[in-house]
Amino acid sequence: MPDGDESNEDEPDKDEAQETGQTKTSPTKTSPMERTSPMEISGKTALVTGANRGFGRQLATQLRDRGATVYAAARNPAAVDLTGVTPIALDVTDPASVAAAAAATGDVAILINNAGSGTGASLLTGELDDVRLEMDTHFLGTLAVTRAFAPQLAEHEQSAILNVLSVLSWVSLPNIGAYCAAKAAEWSLTNALRAELAPQGIRVSSLHVGYMDTDLARHVTEPKSDPADIARIALDGIEAGETEIVADEISKQVLAGLSAGVRGLYPQVA
Ligand SMILES: NC(=O)c1ccc[n+]([C@@H]2O[C@H](COP(=O)([O-])OP(=O)(O)OC[C@H]3O[C@@H](n4cnc5c(N)ncnc54)[C@H](OP(=O)(O)O)[C@@H]3O)[C@@H](O)[C@H]2O)c1
Image 1: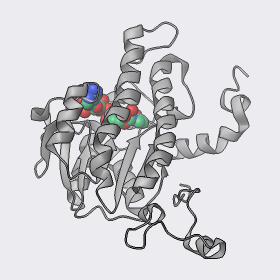
Image 2: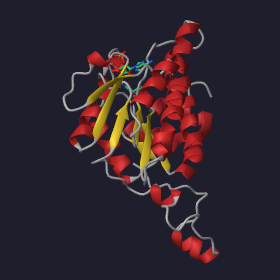
Image 3: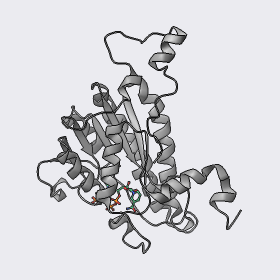
Image 4: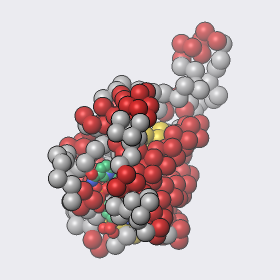
């Protein structure tokens, strides 16, 4: 995993500031730069979307076990079967539901955009409604939730957003092109919002992972990670202050191969 302490390059560090004579914007308030330092999960309030099953359920469980107060958000909150968490209704594609969840909370310092769809649609031959659903869930849904919760995240001295992305944010599989396009769009969103939210002291991180053993990948016959292991890596990454959490070998390989361009990533058609 790459060293994740990739602080906002626009912000001078303390030594740089001394050298350049730049001072912090306020002597009493922690600067955005310092707020991207490691953060403890214990004692924070966290919200996980899609927490009723799969990877989101693992994240909610482990956040709880690390001492966070957890909102387990789900389209159907009655489907949340965890103890010690607060179920809350949240459909990321429904603006009224997103607004209601933000209004019902107010103290969230860690937001995990995890909810995801897997229609399996090809871009060329799949149903356009399925293509739209992928974009609505992964891209517009993540954006809507982030916009709605950013004001309460900004209230905290330390706050963080983790977007659950994929190795498929970086490389596309043609048979599930709609999902890949949505994950790529969500990656781009993550990078833009990281820069936009840094001045508010909100750290935005991405998680990249290959197949995990959940319903979403139930038809996959290739090796799959245990979502519990990936959740542990993700939460360790949040605590360590990492902005890009690359959780498995395939994601590391693809990241390392990006500089090879199309020829390296798609040798069969280049
Ligand atoms: N599994 C993998 O191989 C893999 C690999 C890389 C990344 N990921 C990412 O990991 C995340 C979690 O996926 P998973 O593997 O845990 O899949 P999963 O087991 O199918 O769970 C998906 C979760 O998202 C929820 N969801 C779907 N649409 C929603 C909406 N509009 N609003 C709110 N919640 C919604 C589902 O709720 P319902 O129960 O109501 O449907 C469910 O809780 C996704 O972002 C996915 O892209 C997965």
